Length: 352
Image 1 (cartoon, helix red, strand yellow):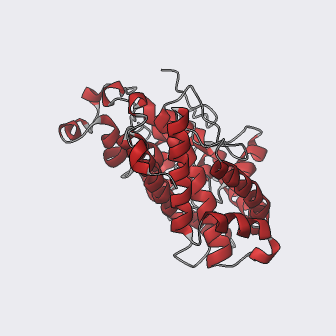
Image 2 (tube, one colour):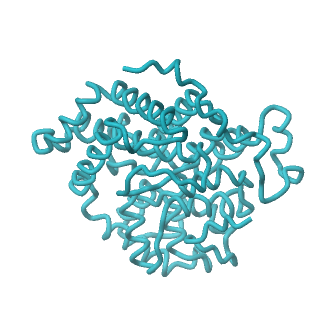
Image 3 (cartoon, one colour):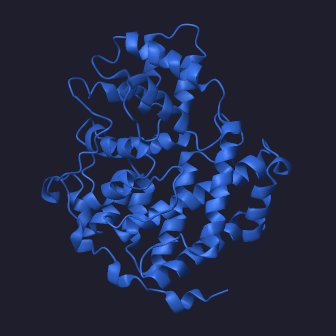
């Protein structure tokens, strides 16, 4: 095993400088201006904006991989986010990149997830005929929905990282057009959720048995005997490959190939643990939102996308959904500020 000490700071020449931060609205008119005395732009995005946002709070009630599981050790979107933060900032620290920028991107990367995760994305895409992508919707939330529709006024660099963190079934290929820090979060996200999902599905809940997925067992245990060992294995190897290539990279090394194969095998397992009646559940809530006057002229698909798993299941279990039930949900305090706004969930609007 190589020594990490020899590569510490190896990409510092590609670090995004704090002085490069830019916002859509001048910081002088930002209500968080006072924080500039105690930190830089990216730390303000992380601690003064994202982590105190309503969208971030809702992550506690959104699916990571297993919906409506009662075990608090099974990850939700917020615990997944914490693991991405841990991995991304560790990688940034080793490579000499901007740790605070990685922190802010990682904290915000999943705020655009619909209820039931990717099942919700698929439902909204089908019902609207428009491609719903959580990474794009996260940017939309940050710019046009948070803070009573005024937005968080995040830096462009953080928004760019949120918009570009997802790869789906594709390889962990870097994008040359984005920052090294954004590429770090993209890789950290994939490593974090694949290892966590193995942990939750096979080791913790045992919803699936390794015996039916021997390849996953073999690949996972090649990298370590537990979650911590596997995470360390992939982070160290990513840093080594990045040092050798002179940029953030996790494609060519033996460890990267093991991870790619592990990821492919996990996507075969996901179909077996998805909530089987998600279309029925989401369909009932969408029908209610389409018919009710409680959301004014706001797009019902947009409202559904903002809801949490807990809220959707709460309303679904009602024989009849009334106004009081709706006002029990977080979206009730959001939609009143969105009336009259034409918000396009497919447009990140980053051409500024």
